[in-house]
Image 1 (spheres, helix red, strand yellow):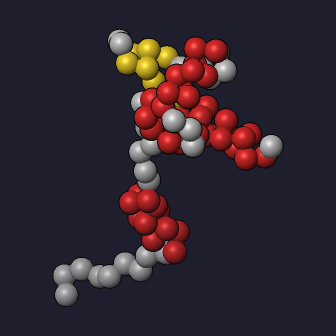
Image 2 (cartoon, one colour):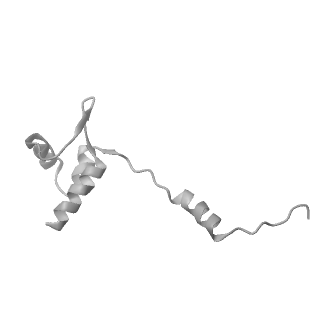
Image 3 (cartoon, rainbow, N blue to C red):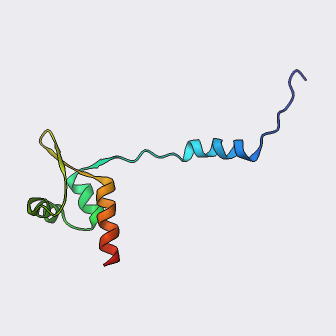
Length: 80
């Protein structure tokens, strides 16, 4: 009685639902996770890193791999 119901447009409903669909994707993966993304063993990943075939970074003593780079490698591997 005190307020009126404001009709919401389809655009507003889409914005509300997209808020909950946003996902946080990690930028860096550990050796174990990176190996799982590529479908190889962690030791094979370390060997490829030593050969210079795969780029990585050290955070302290921990070896980390860029997730976007790994996904691009995986896509290239699937095309071959």
